[in-house]
Amino acid sequence: MTHEHSDEAAMNIGENIRNKRALKKVSQKIVAEAVGVAENTVASWEKGKNLPPPDKVIALAKYFKCTTDEILLSDEERGLEIQMLGLLRRFGSLNETHKPIALNVIGSILQGLEMEEYMKGERNEGSKRLGVLGD
Image 1: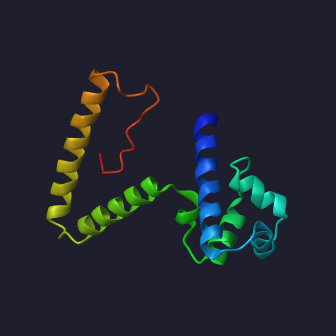
Image 2: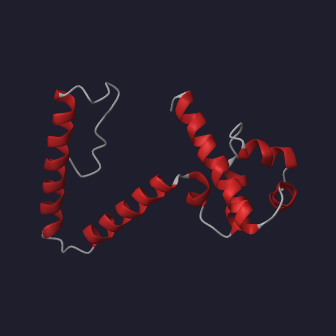
Image 3: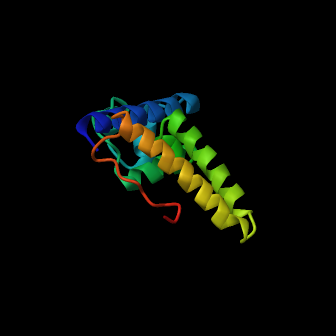
């Protein structure tokens, strides 16, 4: 993860915390006390200067009664997660005869798209196929 992406992630997380706090209509001090940090720590998270450690992300999610994804991910990323989970559920409901067929079809589509990106120079050198679909 590059520094730029890290800054973007910190800003998204900070914005999510600020939005959750505003919805709950509480101060940074109240949130800080609830999760066991100093008030200026919450302020630095909201400004995107620092990232909350994993244990504090969990504490924030419990306090705001939300998922950790709602703290960590942008709206766009959460939407994609929901879409992917839906596809995985659909795949899981297929019978054992159809699962390998679906994997082959999806694998072929992805391979074609990856090749197209590579040929157009759109694919980063560091990009690797994950091999998630059994190839």
